[in-house]
Length: 396
Image 1 (cartoon, rainbow, N blue to C red):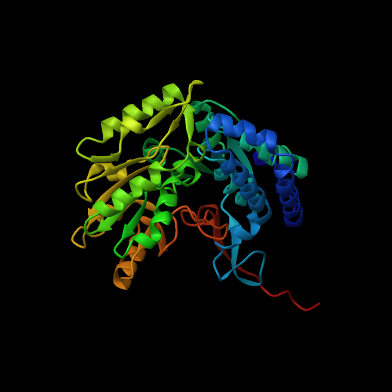
Image 2 (cartoon, rainbow, N blue to C red):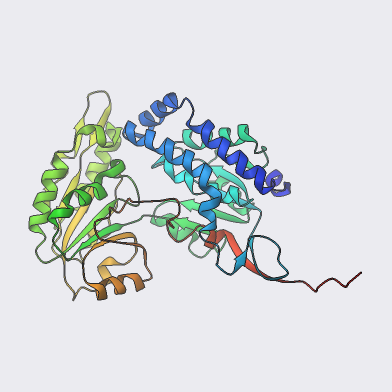
């Protein structure tokens, strides 16, 4: 960490060249990597292959993606008079998540902007940051510019202390721990949702995809489905679609871990109506591992506490919603897909500060593009605008 603090960033042109080369190196001959990550993460093989492409593209577009968050009145470099966009620090620590390889696409923007980056990998899946940082080193970033630092939790806190800024992934306990620390940007559960006030039948496949895409493990997978009117017909149709999904697109866990998750789900479902319940959740594969099948439960109201429950497999809660329920059931949502034609409702959803991303119409909650903010732009945290004015030089 001291070495990262002492180093100076590569020139921008060298950074961009190295990032582009790193993307190519990361994607090259990746089948053995895909095999390892598939086995240790339990995610479908096709999802890992897709993540390879996502990370390779993220390397190439990291600087362009970062620029999306630059204020329109700010310049990238020194000006005679005006605002200049500058880093808020030198070293950026990432306490990474292990639920999906693509989470590592975000911190590449910090490297592109000249930060030196320290990554503490998840113990669940350290292979992706190891391969990515190895590619970045081989492409031209020195060891004192980007470092992989596996360590225990107490040492992880030291990595944050030694950095100017940090990005931390975790559950509600992590959010609470760092909520008042201005140096740390916590990334917690997404609790992404879908709100339907219009005809749902044409969008049934989009709703299924929102719940189960990428094995349903992400913060951008839908866990809450709110329906204006009677949700039962949609719940029945969803259950049939989710039950038909093949094991190959669903997450695998060690059998003991799968049974623990089943018991946890059983504890959470009191007072709900199961359409796909705990009795069908675990499929024992006979080799010490199990597939977790989708779970779907009907809630009595939009205020039921289960609506905020997020689990690492396709698990959704469907509830009735009315205008009288208002914004309360929709708050604290990373992505909300609103399938509605009500413009006043859309305006109200847009104005709600605890809904991070709003997708209107037939758009799955997992939709993403490098130029879209994930939970605001990362550069809102990494950068600031500094006023600069220079006295004109006297004539010679």
